[in-house]
Amino acid sequence: LEKDRHRGTLAKQILENEIFKEAFSEMEKAIFNEWKHSTDEEQREALWIMIQMMPRFEAILTASINHGAVASEKLQYLNPTNKRFANY
Image (cartoon, rainbow, N blue to C red; front, side, top):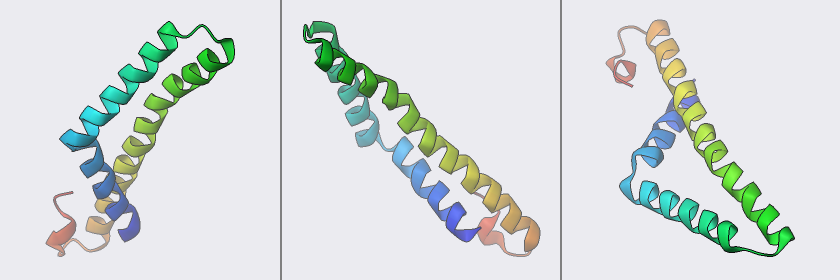
C-alpha cells in the first residue's frame, strides 16, 4: 500500500508539473501538425498511432494517482492515528 501511495504522489507531481504540461502539449501539437501535412501513408499511420497514445499515457498516470489515493485511504483506515496518510 505504501508503494502505491508513493507512486500516486509521484504521478500527481508529474501531471501537475508545468514543464511537463507544456512539453506534453507541444509534443501533441507537433505530432498532429506533422500528421496533418504528411503525404506518406505509413508515416501518417505511425503519427496517428502516436496521437492516439497521448491520452492513454495521461490515463496511466491518472490511474496511478487514483490507486495512490485508495492506498492512502486504506493506510489511514488501518492506522487512523498516523496523520502521515491523512492528507493525500
